[in-house]
Structure formats: structure tokens, C-alpha cells
Length: 529
Image (tube, rainbow, N blue to C red; front, top):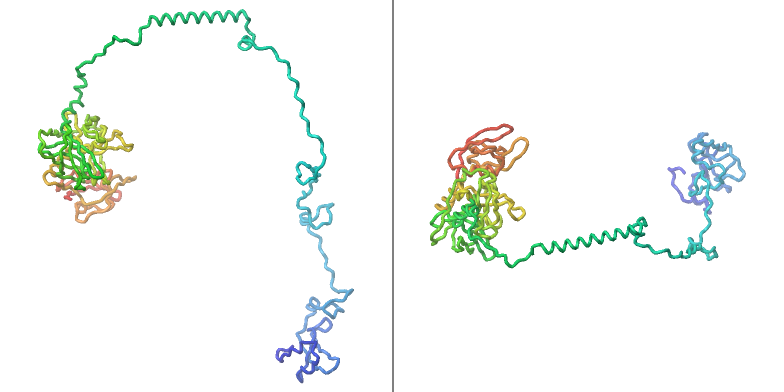
């Protein structure tokens, strides 16, 4: 149909009763195929047997012979389906022989039937074994059937006649000893038993009795001279009356420590952590107990959490025994010492040992019962120091106080031979300041430091520097590492704290520090805190 002409549905309806009535005048309609093998590219006109319907020629593009041969109808075929028995000029398709490799892989084996599918359970090239006969005992669906009889068990043989009984000679000796030899052995054994019994009876009659009512025990009223004259005993007799127990009691708790008298006016030296509870709670009851069990109320004259030292004051106590203070600077490692105190609440306890080490930097941190925050330059001793020994005196062989028992390393709950005491040379100036002013001023250099230990340097690393402080004036900067201060080697921040605290306010000290792989020396003047 020409796209330029109007379309009429009736033109495509071959069942219309009156085609002429629906046609337009002057328009020829054509129907049929675009072409055939007989008239390619020609004009095709439709004819009406009645001659009443006009026709119109339809022109198409010419069809090439190759296209007509491929897509056109075979010769002699006018409709859509070829009539039966028709022949075609096209050659019959020829199938090439399959590739030998593919034929071997996908072809049927020789002697197989023409079935389209092989049994998937069959083994190719293997001889099939006949199936075993059905066993009705193993097949639950098998019908009932008669079978052979069950296998009979062989009958047990009749019991044999009982043999002769075995005698002692057969059982013990396997019939290898004659009767007369066996009788000889029995006689010898009997003789040995008789002789042994007679000897036992004889020795029992002549042995001395174990018990006696004539023995009297006596005791010697005199003591051993070696025990009475031992160095520890002499020290204990000289110091025990100057040692006191410190008892702190609250409504919901208590604390126990030790101390010793340092002045006839009633001043007693102890640790700050012993009296921290009494200082923080006004309702606490603070008492000291002397060696004669006399209890006396006490007051805190002053305390210093930075050095863990406190001074107590008792009034109206006559005939006080004052401890004799010694010199801790002259202590030597291996020197004998005696520790006094009330460990675990057991007052008037004495332990002895030696000085194990000197100048141990021991940190004491705050906890729920104490506000002590100090690092002590401790005397290390193997004399047993347990909780309750704190504040008691550490005494040398001359009965002079060389330290204040302060801490013990007790990871298992008891002493393991590592006790620490504050040197008396450091405690005396602080005690005098507390008695005089009630407080203590400490030297400081205006830095915070932390430990550093690596392959390049070992010491106290500066974390921050207070502007205008002694360290800032001396040129120290952050990340500098102090390795020596006031003649003391520094290997940790705690050792630097001890070295600074033992310096004097306003007196210049020399120090050595490490920076960027190089070592420098300087001088600074500690200031008061």
C-alpha cells in the first residue's frame, strides 16, 4: 500500500461483500506478493472476476537473482506451502565425516545398541559382575520362605577324670627335691627359730628399762652469758623505752604505726601516712602507747606529705626516754641494724638484719588511707619491716637511730627481706621545721619529667618547663634528658626527684643533660616551692 494514500480497512478485508462501495474513484488497489521467482521486480496487478473493482499498479525495488534464489519459493510452488511430492532445485545438504578425536570421545562404543543414552551407572569397558542372589535375611521386603537349618554348634567334650592332688613338694619345689632333703630343711628352720627366740629373751631381760621414777629434772637459774651479751639484746635494752605505738581509731576504721621520742618536751617522730586518717578526720582518736602500756592522747604538731614525715606532741608525760640520733651518712652496706615497731599491731617487736643498699629512690603514692606523695632516698635493709613498723626507728649497733622505717616490699602479704627507711640526716631538718613552723619548704626546679630508657640515653626526660623557673633559666627545653644532678647519676624521674629534694634552696648545683645526641653541662639554682 502506498503510504501517501489514505488507508481503508476494507481494502485489507477479503470478506467484504461490496468492495466497490468502499473504494475511492480513480484509485487502483493491488494485492499479492512483492514478487516471485517468475516475475522479479515487475508490476503486479490484481484482477477482479467481476471487473467492477479498479486496480492499481504497485512498484517495488528489483530483487536480485541471488536473493530470490535464497528467499523465494521453489519452482512450481505458488502458495505458502509446497504441495506433496514437489521437487526442489536446491542441492541436498551433505554431512561431513566427524573428526576422529570427537568420534572417539563422544561416539558410541563398538557393539553398543542404538539407545540415545548410556546407563550412567555402567562402567565403560569393564565387565559387569552378576548381581549376588537376594538374601531374604537382609531384605525386609522379602516374602517368607523356607531356608536351610541354622549352623549347629559342636557338642562339648565329656569332662575328664580328676587327677591327683598336688602336694607341697610339687607346688613349691616342682618335685625337684627328694623327701629326705625336704625334711632336713624343715629341721634346720626349726632350730633357727628356737635359737632366735632364746637370744631375744636373754637380751630383753638384761636391757635397761625405758621408764623410771627416780629421775629428777633441774634448771639453772643463771642465764647464758652469750645470749645476754649479744649486740641485738644490748641495742634492744637501750632503745625499747623510747619507742611508742601510734594508734588511730575512727568510727569505721583504724590504723596502727610506730614512732620514737626525739625530745623531752614530748615530741615524737613518725611517718605522715601513719597519721593521715587522723589529720583528715577531726573525730579520729589519736593516741600513743609507751612500752609500759601507758596510753596518752597525742596531737599532730606538723606533717609533710612530700617527705612522709610527721611530728606528734604529747603533754604531761614524765620521765620520757629520748632516742639517741645517729648519722646516716656514714652507713655502710653490710652494717648490722635493728628495726623496732609494732608490725601487724604486735607492739614492742624487734627484728635485726643488715644494710642491704643505700640511696634507693622509692616512690610512695597516695591511696585511700594516706595523702603521702613522696619519693624517699631510702636505706634498704633485710631486717623484717611489715605493716605497722612504719615510723619506728632503724638503729645501728651503737643503739643510735639511723633511719625511720617507712616501707616494705610485701607482694605476698609478708616481709621478703626488702625494707626501706628514711635516712635520719634527711629527717632531722624536716622535723625541726615542722616543730618550729608546722610546715616545710622544699626545693624545686620547675619541670615535670618521666623515665626514658633506650639505646641512646638513660635518665629523666623533661616533659614541660615552667616559664621563669630555675630549669628555664638554665636553658633546659622539653625532651632534654637529665643524666646527672648535683653529683648524683640520674637514671629515672624518681631519682631526679630525690636529687632535687636533697639540694638546698638558693644554692647553685651542677647538672648534665643530653640533647639531640650530644651531652651538655649547666648550672641551676633550686627555688622554694
